[in-house]
Structure formats: structure tokens, C-alpha cells
Image 1 (cartoon, one colour):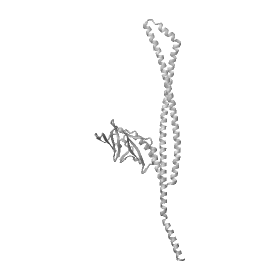
Image 2 (cartoon, one colour):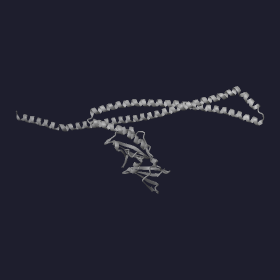
Image 3 (cartoon, helix red, strand yellow):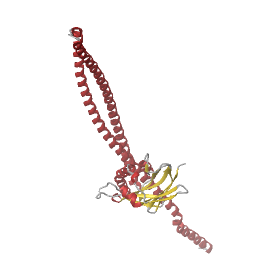
Image 4 (cartoon, one colour):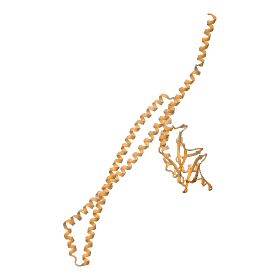
Length: 362
């Protein structure tokens, strides 16, 4: 083989080897892209599954509230029926009394009245007989008024009866809608889980997260309801600094003070709430269920409002779409007992404490 041809083949071989040696480098961006897509897909599916879990939990809570309301309405309806029956019996008795008096007045009244008035022996006897007649007339009038009052009460009870029947029908309809929605959400979750199982290697971790979230949700609901009904106005500050010249005051609440109020009334054997004040955040922890909720705070005239910021289960932060559903229409306020003319100008959470700054109202 001539030398130039050998050199040409060697050059081709070198180019081929070089191209192959660069293949992993060229392929790595594509692999990174696949990995990124997998992570994005994982995050999307987690967000979708946890959102569906949240919707199902809220739906279950609404259904339970509807069933409680249904029992209350049934009890009220039974009471209404009993009251109506009592009023009907009383009205029937009063009607018989009125009927007897009417028959007496029609059949024997004229003769009796004349006999009473004209048969008097003297003025004293006449006055006595007249008093008896007035008493009889007043009794008739009273009976008629009582009968009218009973009739109106029966009509009112009848209206309550119809209203409660309609309320019961509305609650039944709401429960039916909840069941239909729950069925739809269960189907959607099954589809999301099937997709996750097909696409993700760590599917078992997704299932574990979903199950943990299902257990945590009722406890968060209970926790938020407890926070909303806490007697915050009874809390006493740990420290107050006054600036008379500027008309300002700095009020400090220590972490332990807030935590003590939060656990007030709980059985010592129960799982306690743990509260931690960090710069910018107040973190509420439930050790038994391994989750925590962080809050930020903001002011509104004479009120201090807590705004849920995030929820973490174990090491996993719950997606915002699920939190938006969970915290919607909730307002957690700390009503600080202020003297007239004062309002909250600023509030901040520092390490181990919360500070509230007061000023004179404008």
C-alpha cells in the first residue's frame, strides 16, 4: 500500500477514535436534560398527588360537618314536631272552652244576663251580679286571645318545620355532591399514582409521603381550629418598654410564654405542641407526626395576624398548591388587649421571642 494512502487511513482512524472519545462528553448534556425532566416530572406528580389528598381531606371534613349539621337538624325537627303537637292539643282544648262559652251565650246568655241584672234584690246584689257578668265576658275574651296566640304559634312552628325540612334536604344534596366529588378525586389520584409508578423509580417514597400527608391533614385541621379559638387576649407580655416622649411601647412575648398558652388545657399525656421563634418565622412542630408549620406575622390596626408560610413533613416541603387549599379563608389573629388610642405599628419575630411595637392611633 503506498505511504500516502497509509497516512490517509491513519488519519481516518485517529478521527474515528477522537469522535468516540468525545461521545460521553457530547452525551452528558442530553443525560442532564433527561435527569432534569425526571425531577420536574417527580415534582409535578408529588404536587398533584398531595393536592388531591388535600382536596379529599377537606371534602371529608366538609362531609363530617354536614353530617353533624344533619343530626342537629333532625333533633331540631323532632323538637319542632313535639312543640307543634303540644300547641295543637292546647289549641283544641282552648277551642272547646271557647265553644262552650259561645253556646252558653247563644242558647242561654240573653235570658241569663237579664235574669242576673233584673233579679237583683238591691244595689249591692246588682253590683255583685254585674261583676260576675264582666268576669264571664273577660274569660271569653281571654280564651279567644289565647286561641289566637296558639294559632299564630302553630303557624310559626309549621314554618320552622318546613324550613328545617328544606335544610335537611339541602344537607343531603351537599353530602351527595361530596360523594360524587370524592369519587372523581379518587379516580384522579389513582391515575396520578399509576403515572408516578410508571415514570418514577422512587415510587415507594411517593406513596409513603402521600400516606403521611393523609395522616397529618386532620391534625393540621385540628391545630388550626385550636389556634383560631385560643384565648390570646389572656396572654401577658414578658417585657414592656415605654417611650413616653414618642408615645411608643415595645412589648415582648417570649417563646416559652407563647408555647405555654398553646398547650393550655391539653392532657399532659398528650403529644404537646412545640413552638420555636426564629428570625422572621414562628415554627409550630408536632413531634409525634413529624411535621411543622411555619408562620409569618403582619399587623392590622389593633390586631396581629399569623400567616401560614409553609408545611414540612419530615424533610419534604409540601407544595404551595396544597397549602393554598388548606389555608384558604383562614385568619389566625392575636388580639392584644390595648388601651384606647393605641394601635400596633410593627411586629417581628426574633430568635426566641416575638416583639410588638405600639404607638398612638392617628
